[in-house]
Amino acid sequence: MGLFLLLVATILTAPAALAGAIGAVEVGEGEVTVRFDGLVAGASAFLLAGPDRIALDIAGAQAGRGADGAGLVRAVRQGQQGPDIARVVLDLARPALLSDPRFAADGRSLSFRLRPVSADEFARAARAPRTEWQPPAGYRARPPQKRYSVTVPIGRPKPALPLPKIEGPDNGRLPLVVIDAGHGGHDPGAISPHSGRREKDITLALAKAVRDQLVAGGRVRVALTRADDRFLVLEERYGIARRLKADLFISIHADSAENEEARGASIYTLSEVASDREAAKLAARENKANIINGVDLGAHSGDVSSILLDLTQRETMNVASDFARLLQREAGDQVHFRTDAHRFASFVVLKAPDTPSILFETGFISNRDDADFLASKAGQQTIARGIRDAVQIHFARQIAAVAR
Figure 1 (cartoon, one colour):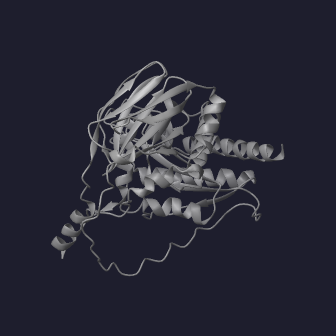
Figure 2 (cartoon, rainbow, N blue to C red):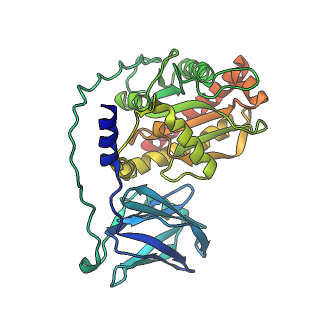
Figure 3 (cartoon, rainbow, N blue to C red):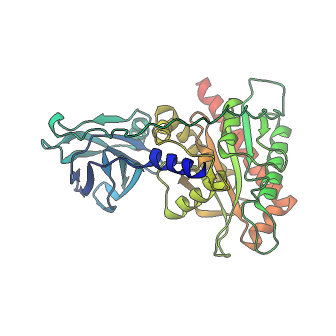
């Protein structure tokens, strides 16, 4: 049976044949050309703000290497989004919009111009749906075809988890904040090499301290994804926030590093492209919390990546980024933040498409000073007050914006 399932998985996940690869990305002062060594099926583009980027998805292609930028483009990065979609990301030196996109007559290159714009104009454009283009019909790669179809009985779906208690004022019109204590149960998270303290215990204590501060303020309602030492699949965590129709989701964690000198808090918001290699590695490590006995409970199809970057998702991501900056400002006087505190990564737990979400790495449990601060009542109250102030200002701003 195990061999049969392995063969099924191999068949279903085998990558489709790629028609072409990205041979080069040529960046000039005001124009970019993406060249292919074979036919591709099409292309689409969308914008991402904070930091400002242009993302190109090339259907029927394989990613190549990144490159240095020039002019309005600071750098070029590439990656594979799925078996038949390559992504090219242009990190912009200043806000700019894509214009005059055109495939060559033989379909072997895509060119477009870059037009510098203001930050406000770029932010507005980043909220628009992606745009799509296709090569000339005679020079267009055929979409990959499925070669196999396998049906496997998987049984009845499990019932949804009971929803947690909502605490605070009995007023459904007040905003709802869901606090997620990272890890739990058989998953201890990071463990301090100095004291043996476990991340799952620290995050639960912090989540309860935040809940108490918010409830005492009386301006929002609060729910915890877990109030005890239990394991939750990552999708269940943000799924609770979605089912409760939460207005804000805060996942609390404690970082770790091989370098015990590394310290400081950081705040992550969702991006399909990580802000740096370290952020990508951290997201990969946290996302593996769904893997139990070698079975990935959180596997997604390639379609999910596209869904996450539709208009609603990108608006949600912008709201989350605004809150991340506000949290750093409000807590920064008492909590030590890293220099590059606001970071971007593709954390599974942040992928609720309609709930602004952040992941707060409150410090390094691998650092003696950070670990002592996070485990102390004084440190937990300090962090909780910073989150409370940021939450209250965040929703006050939203109310004021609606009133205008």
